[in-house]
Image (cartoon, rainbow, N blue to C red; front, side, top):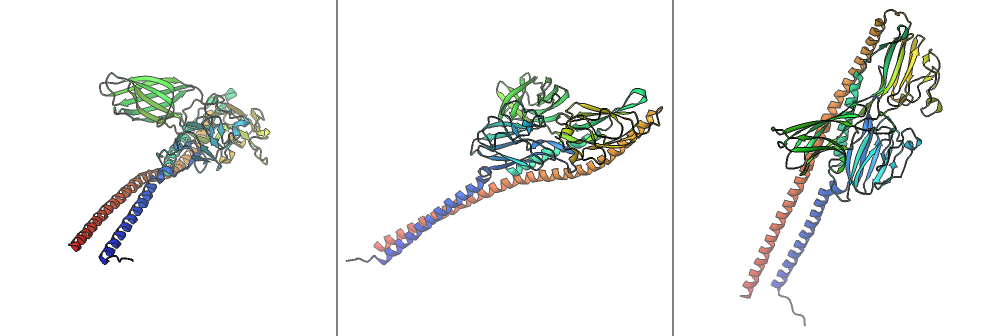
Length: 541
């Protein structure tokens, strides 16, 4: 025989059931909400697996090419991919040598893709020649610090730091983009200043003639400043300046503050990245702290060419070096050496006025470039570089105004000369960079002023000054636009940091609100339970 449950007990059991269901629902909601919140908070840390690095860059008119990988240093996790995009009008490579010697830039191997699309930190892996706009994707499987370079441009180096899988990322792609834009703009700005270097000396030649000089491409001076930031409680900081003052000789000046009087501090250049470590490469003169807490040292350092196949490539790499300040306590201050570098894809001066009998000497003044000086007669198609006609000197050294004349490829430091014997206006190009507007003009006047060469010099200087004024005006407008972009980029970086803080604050507020709500609900449940217990007790009485 079934017994009926009292009405009051059924009411209480129903309420208990509702309370239990409510608590279960709240628990599930809280778990899901917290998981989503934490997932959102960590999304910027763990979900970015695809990265972009821009290879080179330049001005819209292709007169200045920036020589770097932007950003110069990037930190990723094992298993991540980087897509390297050639953002330049020049060809480049992305080449990881893993400690092997550089590839001869003049060999077919320099142009070839090597090793596929996975890099484990060993062996040679290279994109081969990347034409403008082409890209190359590489997957990094092994933690480490990896330096890479362009086969064609000795000082063009970058660093990839690979952390173990799951390590939080220090920056987002958006932040790396801003840093890369600032690095590229700094390189281009230095390249723009090269247009002022057009007053090359002229010397007297035989029989009253004049020898004129033209720079076939120019590279930014090899010099850079480095900020040294404290990494210990000693709060030592400062800056360093590196400069190539002659082939094979680098001057390094280091200035520090926060030193203890009489204490000796070691100064060294490492290969790698300050935030990840590396291998000691050069030892500089030590610094002893003065009574006012400052100290400095100057070191004249002998260095090797960055590329053994280019004997003139005495340069500071765009990245891959850092300065380490230490004493018996360990490392005290660090600073990555980022050396902005740009190449001018023009002849300086672009237009030169001479007289019959004068000689013009072109010299490649860029340690990272190869150029040709090629006069192509009217009606003849400009040869493609790489064809047999483009690779050999043709025509001799006396230019009579007709026919095909070419220096062939000139490596850094090499020169080519022509003596002009026929009046006329003659245009020449670099076969490698003619598509970038690298062309020049020689105006040859009759030998009217044999006994007054100063008139020719004045005329030439007036032409050069006119060209320089025109170039500077266009570059000033370009720099105004760059300054505006700088300000926008800096504001973007500040906004990115503010956004991160706002997201974190919102997450914290949400978690706090949820905790408060749960506490209130628990109190209400306790009150309901106590109320029901009181009702049961009263009914039993």
